[in-house]
Length: 249
Image (cartoon, rainbow, N blue to C red):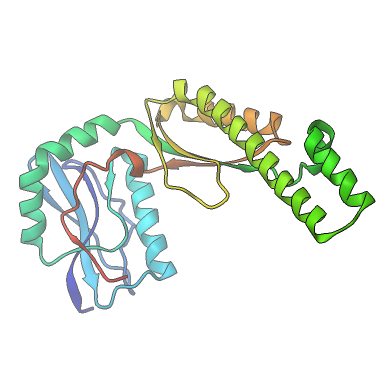
């Protein structure tokens, strides 16, 4: 397979062991190797020509990061990080080794849990029963059907559902924050009233998940919670600079 540089997956401790049966991006899957400098190493493979964000390669990248994170701390690189050659990777490790070591120590023993909160879409009956304004607009729309009445009702329902979800989101944030080492706000997501990641001790992860699930079960009429975990600590290693350029994906 012809190559177009060195594909960089992650920074790990220098003594980290690669999964024996794991492969990298490309077809066929590129063999993995490490480039070590001091106390850290970069997990790399040859980069394929014309790298694109194909499902196969996205999954290979994600699966490798997850398997590395199962065995120890990982500074994950986003998909498509490619260095021109091994020397470039080595120099970056030498220049930023202290920062990488500190970041690895900071997340050691931890996993990321991401929580998103959305308005509960199957809670209209409960909303009408509990919200006087929505109930009044519904009754008006029934008595005098019109486009304007339906529009006012729809806007009121959407606003009330979002407000209820936002309040539930603030409550779950208060409940989960003490169970985590750190929190990191995520980017805005359409329709989402809360997007937060938590750095959780691996030993406490199941308890964290159970707490989130209990809250979700008890507040189904207010909020839909989506919990994704355990994840590599993407949101807590933003200070770790990548040793590469991003390929045109």
